[in-house]
Length: 341
Image 1 (cartoon, rainbow, N blue to C red):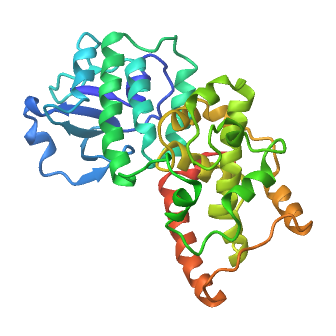
Image 2: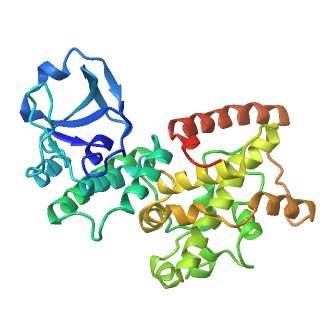
Image 3: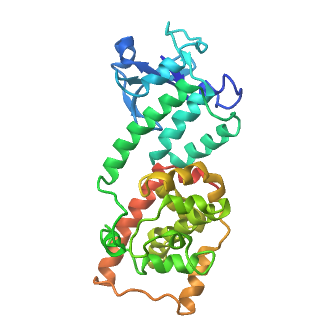
């Protein structure tokens, strides 16, 4: 058995866990603890996995069975020499190292559930650890877990994701036909830092959606951060702020930005761009453009015009109500209130 989560961190960083925080324990299927985990009501934990809750004295244990062959089993081996958790159940529970907990947390940052709280905790822990994080066994376990999660999460989100196509083809597949009242690239041009959005300066073929990593790597760190922010500005406006304004629903600029950043870090982007956004979350979050005001000024000056959508205003309002309700629900599941307003 392996203790992970905040109670495990408290062994090295006292006070980091709330006194009433649950004790999150991974249980190897080979340990045959059916008596402990059966007959209890299953719940979904912060990572979105099903687990069983066992209460004993003043402790609440969340037990998650890890099947043989699951990549998480590698973390059991990597922590087999760690200290044991004292308990009254007779369980042999190793306490995972802070490095293991950080690496597990990093892998799960591809999943949206409770994301805003988890990414804050991950970067807080990261600031306490030496580089490189973990030993060779822990890093190997992380790569295995990361690969498994990406295969499952990306397949569930969009198994045919590909940017090596013409811009028209890439944007044609947009699944919210009544959402965009402006061309996506027009929002980029309106809110970018200079006259041209940074992603366009990197393309070797302006007619394709594909942006090469080699060009991104040659940017200064400041411009790399700015490029992620520019995508957040356009997405926040398109996906949340403009439709909310059309409905007369209040929505803060910062929460819209965080909504967009979460989408980039989880289900909307892939590969190096998503990883860069996750790893530099704190810097990206400290955005420095009042992009909502910039958008309003552009509309007022006639620099942005609305498209004519083939839907009646009444029907679009009904569609937008359902759409924004779904976005608000996803934000609550992702704990967006864990971010500064």
